[in-house]
Length: 461
Image 1 (spheres, rainbow, N blue to C red):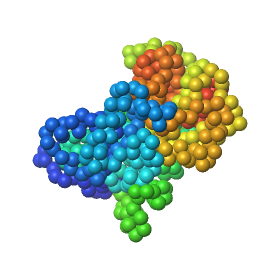
Image 2: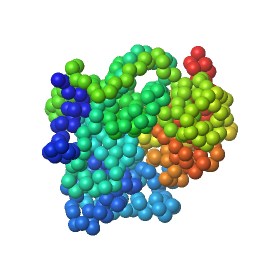
Image 3: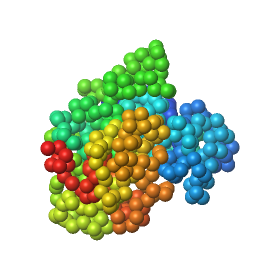
Image 4: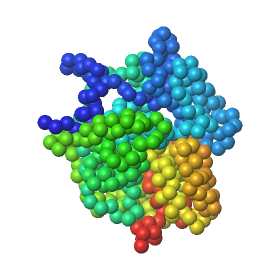
């Protein structure tokens, strides 16, 4: 029987297997930031255990970082302490750190791929659930908790039970204006937030094959929101072209040798999966969420369901929406384009293509937060920073920003925010805030109009 992409990468990293128990999986790359690493460092310090492979760890500052005046001392004492601890720990253990002000600083799941740190066939972990982003390259990438961060520090390995396999296939032609964010929001709306629990998901079909690497990262990023341990897309020429020439990518003959191996990774034709879903691309439209989990999604011109369970009713009460109503024409005062889901140069190109020559609505606070200093550089080189500034948008410095309420960029209580981030839980963007997940195109249109509009009619006709 053939092997899946997941099987091939997993099996190549098994150090040992405990009879009738878990396996020891070797980890190629360990990404860390300021949030989950301090406790793990302290645990090893207390036990007198050294870091096993500091050369395989890359650190960045992202969650607690301010996105204005990054050249000044961080004002928030908790954030400042966490960032200082990260710097001290990395200096002490010889770990590469891209801190505030560094040319490679940025959101961990943005800067690692764009530097060529992320490569096909790897196992990668980070103390952050959206580590699944890196699966877009055909790597096994997943988030781990603080105790597991310490485990990888100490041994460069993890004790794990192998997940089951899931494949989601989407074939056909996407309608104009349907972006990768819409594809993954549609999938989650159809199968729910628990469908992937206990599984590692592979995305297959021509829709994913035709996506850019930025689009694939958006899809894999939100695998967690369907409950999966992670998501993967088989590496192909698009992958190889993206990686070639990156700072930490193999060079010359080493790159050619790596590509030869990477080409062996895609799922064998006779491989089987524990569970499969199939979708028609033509059924997908620009999406919005109306509730408090990413599975509560509808097409932009659809109505919210009439009825649901207690969770549904509670979500509508929190969001102040009514069953059977539409989200169209809902006044929006905050728009956020950023996060590890949608803060790459392609996302800003899409937004800029709509924004150019227009002015944002007076009522809207439009925050644009690039995912890294590299993206900032690209924005300037392409003149997109001026496009956004001329339209009245606020261009901030890199960081996780308003994706989560761990820094200064919070949405006020009671306000709606059309956000390109990945989660819409109660208070995710600030206590009492109300999050509507959407693509960068829908977010940009909302900022210009000051309300949610049907882009399938106002933009695409």
